[in-house]
Length: 234
Length: 344
Image: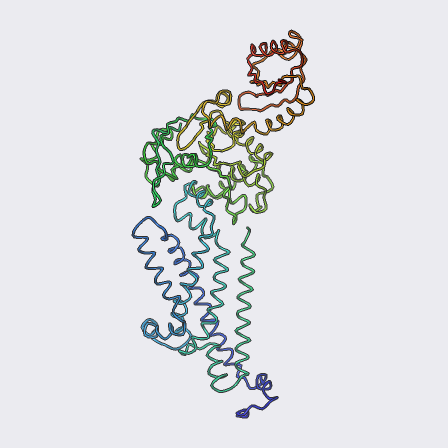
């Protein structure tokens, strides 16, 4: 090690010493981050919409069963939304071990990522559904549409900009969570920054990891914004 | 065609009981335009929603042709709704769909094939005068255009009945007239029974054949539109009929004041004509026979579905005896005479 005692002037040199970076490791970590993010986003998208619809439909229902279901789901949603991610991931280790037969590698981070983001997204979906014009629902019912047709043809398309904007926000927080998932050995850019950058005092690795994560976030934001403005005809 | 028998509707919640409809009995004939008029809270909206089964009566029955709505199961009611179109005050179009797709919506619900959906929707867009706007989104349309889309959508499954929930209340006067003309044409050409609710007597006067005036959950007066306008019995009906003439009266009052200062020695009289009931030149006859001079202050026509109604405000000038005789003579004709102001 040449830089155990950083001197003034060499600080920036440490950050920008790109020659000594193992780009293979960086590439591998980037792929791991992308893998965890994309799989969890897809799972959270479907799970969140289902949960959001469930919350919306059972809220203020006249049936006692639906009210009970709402209370249970709402409770679970609030619990999982409130547990700090870093604790949730540790808490879920035995569970992850049972279903994946492993607690390391990018897949090991998925259960915790999905369980913490799906409830958050479900609430976003629910509030999006609440914004759908009640008059339009009435119009569809007056045409003879059944519950499923109302959901498929009115609720989903009429709240789609909210659903898409919601998944964009959720995907960005998921990128942040994947960095934390590194602590249980799930890999990814967060893990790389921690192991290489922090523990081995290589700020150049940390900087590269940061820049790549920022790029991923910007790309997600750009895709989300473009998609919303394309579908929003209001 | 539609029979309401002993309808009562009560809402119950924590705040207490609310009787939206107290006792409603009514039969609506096939092919007519029937209007319900009343202030908000009178129960019109609830009544309209009982007809397509969006609401269910607490007591009484709704009969559609020979089917009793409350005896049908949910699926059968949904099927029945496909033959009842509905249009709304705020149009209730899907912003996410184009004009064409909005009109196709009820056809999708009715499981009509794609080619047939396209054909039917395009035909209806032509009918309501929106050709060329097929691919526009509701946000790009004016209020009147949106309501035309609403009407096309309501007609998609060839309904027997069209329910109109304050369909013109959010539109300006000119657009209101255009939409009313369209509704009248639909009633005439497609033989669709139209049931509309409104708080504007003008709408009733222009297109309805019969009207029911509602107040606090009951029908206080019902009959042919002309009869109700000619002889409003209930105070609520009188208020509605008067409100329809309000603009005219306001202007008249100002003109009245002016004329009373200009010609302090006259009688100001309002004559109310009904359609072609008068076939004699009243004004000239009265003037000739009694020797009074007649000055016309204001005249207006209001069209109804059956015949037009006219109002004429005149000033009688001459000696008191002559004027008295003129008034008596006016009263022998089939018109309504009302003295608005004297010089005494």
